[in-house]
Length: 273
Image (cartoon, rainbow, N blue to C red; front, side, top):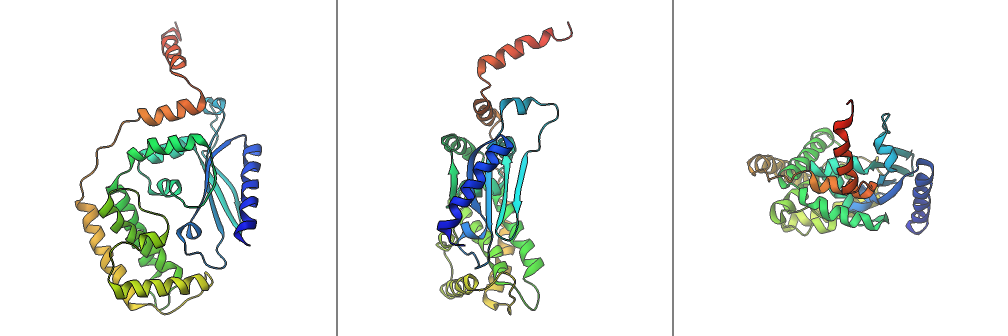
């Protein structure tokens, strides 16, 4: 389905989620191969969103789930996180939520989200991100790239995180999402040509097609895994900020003002008197 046709359909689905789930979607983006810039002809649409519920929902004893899994089929994979879950993951420097925050394909963005992400960026950890990207590349390599035949897309599921490690090491900030931007890092000329040729092949092949391994790319991935395992272990842990800024985000979103919190605190000793 053409992109010009799919975007309004996705936005309509987001409005439907807001109405049926009684939530406010703050941010919705494309995740996965389409946002990375190397989708296959039959790639689905990986839509991820962050939402906030009503203030009453956050005071329930029977708390609602902190995820909404809306649709999964051959065309769509749509699910989202509650803002509380997202803020907890920002605090942990979860690379996934930082990737969503930098997606080049944005379906919906409320003004509040810009301030939320401006606050959350202070919690990004280079060490945590290095471990994440190294782990993704290692897992992909061991599971999918050590056989007699491979799927081209799996090369990029290893290459993208390894190039992200290179970017992290140089810039000390969240890496770009688009693969072509990651390819701006320093690479041997012949390897760059191999990867660029592989990328063009990947864009024209179906997801399940298998092919013979490409020796130069295999060796690069294997060598990089050794490098980034060692560097992730050696890099110093960054000092993590406290919870106050992220707490303030959810207080502001749910309308729990500072005076309201003070009244609650003052009233608390009277309970059971």
